Length: 255
Length: 337
Image (cartoon, rainbow over all chains, first blue to last red; front, side, top):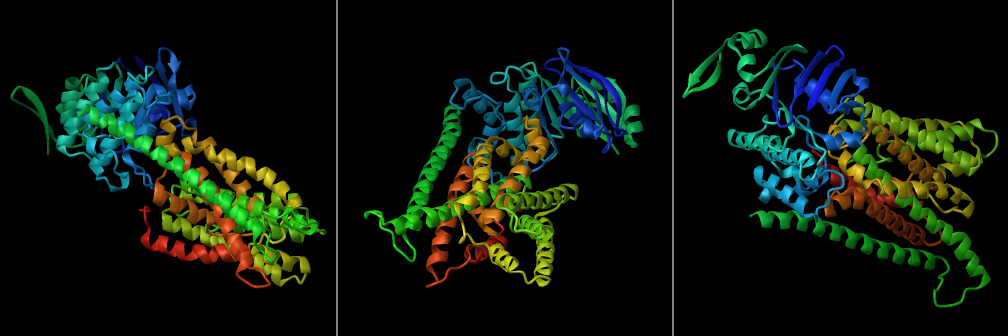
């Protein structure tokens, strides 16, 4: 169980609190510049007090933000927005660096976990490639695989939370499907998943809980149906939104 | 499918590690062979199979051996600090010489020479050189981070810093006709001809730092993937950066104090190793150290043998070898995006 209490970042993000149960998928939505990435960075512990972070991220009454970084790395995995290193790193090398500290590649459990994740993102035939030669979508799948291995329960018993900052941005629609399968697989292990997302229809379908941010302020919080309403979205995004039902599933359409 | 992917992942990692270990072994053997040649050849050839006369023993122990140690430690220090600096700046073309850090060291040494009435001891020289190189490293890292500089810009800022320091050094030379300053000039061209055991107090400081850096491969591997990512993987990037800057400054300052400005070793060695074998810093750093030492020992053999009754400064040798390779690297711009 994660309790985020009064987390705030200078004047970019005003204090907000919420909870995330084990295995719950929480989406953070809002316009560009509304503070989604700032919130995720603050919860991940990679933004520090120097950047004006205050508040607590509690797991069983232990504050993640005051732990040493090496312990934090065991409890949460954080995928920041797209960045590619300047060096010629091989895919398998990148993945090996993402394994939790102490995991040994000759261990049976580690091998199984690695295989399941590689299978889920369909990277079997890309392991030997240099990351410089990958397309944007391939590189994003490598990063997703890495961060999932970091929190995969069978090889990291301490993991509690996976944070993904706009993971779908460079993916095509088929790959996006893989992403949501991967998120479900992680959540099924009892790990909370926190996702910043732009595709509101995906949020409507896949989120257990939604945080709608506007200008660094929490606009509303709750179940997707309650938060993603025509009025609420129109107010925050300053555009016309309609909710329609096709084959008994709700969809949002925009101007 | 499951099984094949498992085999692949494990197999790929093990194969790569085996390859690195083999390369480390080969390079070590090459270094030992070159060192042996370095000790044997020269104006007087020393044969390992004959007993040495008193003169020959003195030649070996008091002239050639300290010189060999100088070449090896400078090569190792520069190559390792080049490799580290490349990771630290996220830039495959970073190098202490090109970026003007060695210039900072030489500038500080010239200033000390002017400020003090007597000829300073090697220890004072080294401290000045370290302070100078540290100041320039901090300026560079600060600028690179604050302004998010691209490869080209960063190199330009470094080159500008280098020009600035050499301009001030030139002013200093112009306004003095002191003999010691002319000696200093020769020394700044990069020469280890006058190496003595006394100077190797500096080596005693540098050697542990080289070894320490070689052991930092794991965190550097993560740092190489990007600062935010390294932080989330559990590396205290801020603290790490300052430790690395201090280590690089000690190594570059120490190298300049020992042998003057010797360019391109820190650039060419790690870069070519990366191209040939990969980017695992755990193995790349020790391999860079050994290869850098081997390259400088080789260059010093050349410096002593190429001219008949004279010898070339070591810096001239490395610059002549390194500059064409550097131009080729810039033109091809391999993995620098």
